Image (tube, rainbow, N blue to C red; front, side):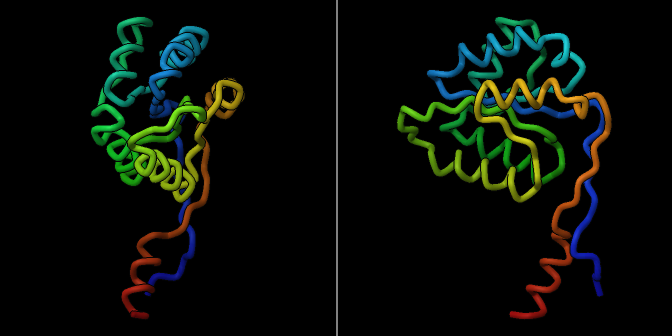
Length: 157
């Protein structure tokens, strides 16, 4: 029988960072990446398709690209969070423009919360996170023991 309700996850010193931006925020994210180039170079970067490509082309940072957000990229990033392969999300969202893939965006935000992944939705929040002393060290945090949760649910239904 599984007993621990929580498990400890470790964010390593070299973080896996997802970079995402809606169309009207891509330029702002690229400028932000330039401002924090020296910090970002120390980490593994990924992002949704167009954003990843634009950041790589305009900053020289190596950013692994997934699909574009509306074509499933947000869901791919969410799956990487579930797999423990993304530690931090920088997502410059556009609150003033309707997005056709809004349910995917909400799912990404939700799964980030479930796995206690730091997520920045604004430049100010991203600035605070990227300059935190925790970016230069390992960080342990507790999340729900998902194996126990599945075990308990399977036995109770």
